[in-house]
Image (cartoon, rainbow, N blue to C red; front, top):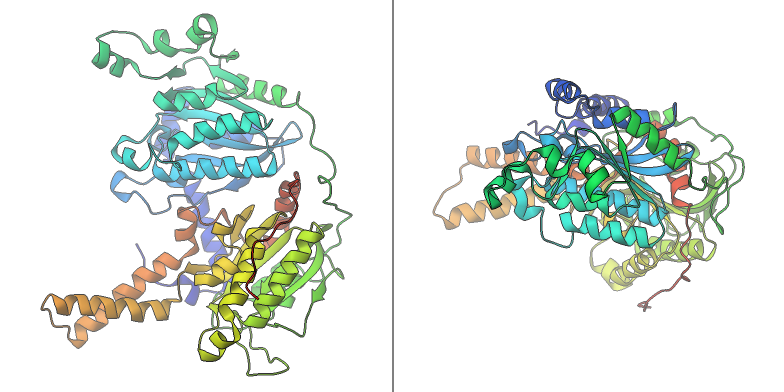
Length: 544
């Protein structure tokens, strides 16, 4: 595993191309041999099923492609966590699709698999997307069962969500197209409609476990085959001979539900889109992969928003944050973006780009409240090092100002979308709507970095802790050893700040090509404005 920092070595366009190569490799799942075994059983792979299911020439908006990246190495890895999730259009209706990838450990559930499925369910619930589950899984990955099985964010939560989603009137359809074993059997049975292909199996315990537990010898077909469930138990609603026939039926059933509305749900609105002032490809000239290089965030916005639509809010105040309203693909939105160069306020010293000060935090808090008042979805562009520290900042009330912004964002009723452009450090991550603050979707550029603090500060702190620990054990650290430890600590920390590391753990939904940010946000807005929360905008106590 390389510990080098690719961000410091490549330009943004080159880094983006390299990430695309990694993504193509991840998409092969368990590899060509596993794909051939799946085909030999007369079954399609998860991605082949999705391709056949969605409408031709329509995009598949994949969620969590990087899940489990470089995790579970001692078990051979689990590319994309062994499940493919995303929003696709089926018979003209947008739906969340969750498809087990049987080429990866027979579709078994790793901890990251559970987390990814739960995230997909949450996105579907928040945005009122019907769900389609393409089930082909051996159940819990037993060697890691303690991290999959019992907790409120573990395997059982998926079934709880099935019940809650159904009660909310959001449609769910499951198609069993392979194994569906043990507790995993509850997922399809808790859905509104259940399909099953011949040769598949649905049972709480497979033939081997039944033989071991009660001494009964029974075949897979007799125990839980499609014929038995169609004719005897009555568990399934539809039986199909092949994957292809089953997917065709799913499309016909999807076409029976109400079509998607042509306009966003009230009070959201949209009008005809206008092309931006600058093409998205200009981003590669504006923004460097090197975080030390400054850029003007307003130039980046010119690549994203509809031309002539941006009205900046308090442009001469709190200048380390740029706030304003605009249209993006015809959608009216609010934007909160970190500036990435020094600014000079009317009074006081120069302010650093990427740092939140009292004035910028208070400006953004007020702006977020205005967006909620006007029902404007909010887009956050993060390139933040954190809040300003020091005596003057503390006396000015930096903690109070930051708390106002955190409170305003936490209680927002409008959809929030977050893009990690560069740094996403410490409390700055929180104040700019990081994953903990419920963005409907969270994206990252390949240049993003996410951690409690920057690499240099962290390396010095961790190195000091390591040296003191060794000294307490009676070990002396010479200059050569100090250099080796510094390189090791820096390498480990840089690996953990990598956006792929974040995406592997579900902190980021999608790593995107910067040039496609506008397109990604438009699609995200189409999803996020399907439903408006009926609750009024409420705030808790503010420190003043």
